[in-house]
Image 1 (tube, helix red, strand yellow):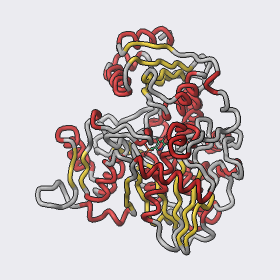
Image 2: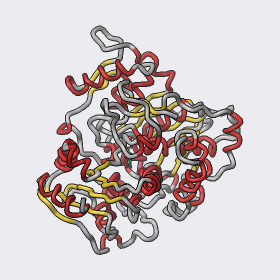
Image 3: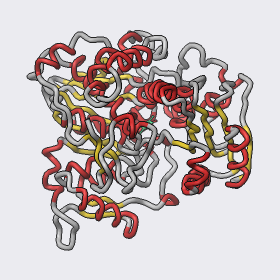
Image 4: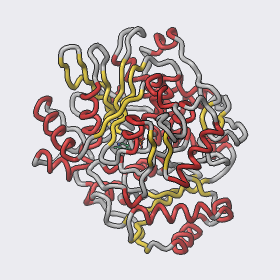
Amino acid sequence: MQYISTRGQAAPQSFSEILLGGLAPDGGLYLPQAYPQVTPAELDAWRHLSYAALAFEVLKKFATDIPVADLQAMTARTYTAAVYRNARAGEDATQITPLSVLEKDGEKLLMLQALSNGPTLAFKDMAMQLLGNLFEYTLAKDHAELNIFGATSGDTGSAAEYAMRGKRGVRVFMLSPHGKMSAFQSAQMFSLQDPNIHNIAIRGVFDDCQDMVKAVSNDLAFKTKQKIGTVNSINWARVVAQVVYYFRGYLAATASNAQKVSFTVPSGNFGNICAGHIARMMGLPIDQLVVATNENDVLDEFFRTGVYRVRKSAETLHTTSPSMDISKASNFERFVFDLLGRDGDRVRALFHKVETSGGFDLSGAAGSDGDEFRHIARFGFVSGKSVHADRLATIRDVEARYGVTIDTHTADGVKVAREHVQPGVPMIVLETALPAKFNETIREALGRDAERPAGFDDIELLPQRFQVMDADVAQVRAFILNHTGL
Ligand SMILES: *Cc1c(COP(=O)(O)O)cnc(C)c1O
């Protein structure tokens, strides 16, 4: 299988060739030349597989240049109950992404698929853990090294560090805003003592950290010499690893391929729900894909109106579902490529317009950039929005009625899912984090602390290892040089 760029001007590449990279050279994002299809017979055969075996079957269709035995070994090592051990009481950890019924109202069924039982208690582990093994495997083959350099406000950085800790050939340099993460998030990252993990706390805000990563990445000579790479959400392997749990959720919720399900996905950078779109394009019987946003509603606006209007980073609101606080959705271009009939020239023009004029309009109104929004229903997408008051009310309601504590991002999902659930079509809400990660808001909603999985009780008391630095690119570069020895 070959991968092409959404902007139509990059040479096709194989899975392994794009694994360690980010954007295509023309500024686009990679997608398969054509989506592999699943047959009803395959779906039937997959009903009884373990998560790891299912992941192997799905990934085999995309990573066609990795020997199958190697891929099988990696998926088996990644998706084990030992890694996804933070299941709640009553959940079966061996399911990896256990599915449970949350609410039944006549023919309306709301289910919760737990994606957050991995080491950092957020769904980003699902993809990042596989990426860690894929990176180590690919680097070992070429006797190569990789220095991952990134910025985080919490979830992504910790998922990356837990996936890369102890991996041969990989170092991680992660910038975070000093004193701005929750105590739990800082403790999670800074308590890692692995010599290949470097946490740098920057005296500044998240945008300062991100600007420093951009400054270093724009220095191509430094980037090449220091073998700098990223693990941000546009990485294709991260997206494709997430396709698996849509198959898993579907197969767990249904008894025959004649049935359909819908998914509601708490969304920020559109990485998670993009994987749902890909599963649907492969032929998985998904009815609706419901995009749930918080106060930062760029995506909800698009899926209601056809107008994509990105916000300036200063306009991004800091909310109590912080991992969805985005001003532009970095994976959205992948969907737009399909919506526009895979016309790379049009995608290039529209995303150039995003840079120059802050957005585009596909509503078909006078003066708009196109009318392809009329095809939106064909792709199953709908959307909704949830704000702080909704979040608190939903957390309280779900706790009171069902005795289940959900995190703030999942609460946004449940709020929006209830607005879209249809009789006879199970609605699966993806649980993207465990509540312990966002305890401040759980206290506000419930007047008590969120329960913590075993082993996290005194995480704040563990010894911490991190550097504090000013927002000074030269200092960070010197630190990297010092630690890579390149
Ligand atoms: C990253 C994240 C999201 C948003 O996912 P995207 O793939 O960026 O849309 C939602 N919830 C949580 C808890 C996250 O960490």
